Image (cartoon, rainbow, N blue to C red; front, side):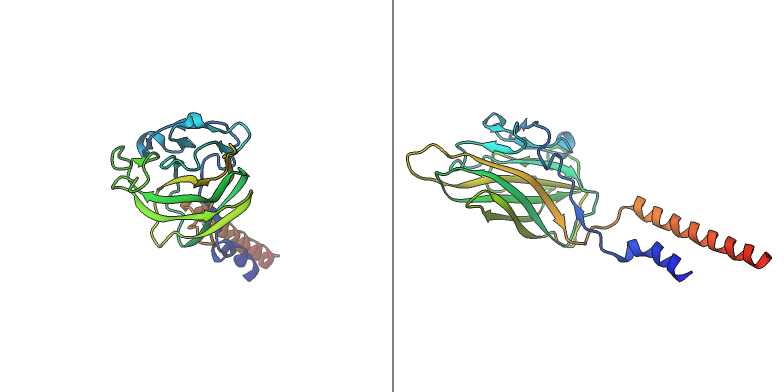
Length: 231
């Protein structure tokens, strides 16, 4: 009997590792919306947006750009539903699939915001502004940069904090300087994930399923015992 109940409660005893659901994180779909800013009301879960989208290319299943390394305030990002699941320690992970040979001291900048509101004005998140890009409804969760001298896989630790949010907004950009007389200033990134380390709260539906399973096991166990005693 104990073993049956152990199987019921095991999912709740174990940690829940989760990925915030960044839309098209692996760039499987070559869609990039042109936008100076996004908001929860009109841009939720649509996927990638960028300031001056025409200077980017997603056709090779990564986010490729040329000539933006030394240009300030060109960001790409999105707003997606998180359903109050992500908190605590975690990380950002991404693949740099190309780094131009005439780029010096490149970094990949990131910022993560959270909100529970849907108002179009207060949830505006700019992609063409460097300082203070977020409307008053957003709370800054984490901001930083990762040194990316060559192509490869990178990750950085993030503290998502104790608060959770229904919606998350993210924005990213490469920055650095160019060198030499060459023109190879291209950059490309792929497989962008936010990961919470065993701290994702199980959704109510998942908890209900676990509870239902326990009830079924309890009833079936009683039924078996009754049948055995009747024999």
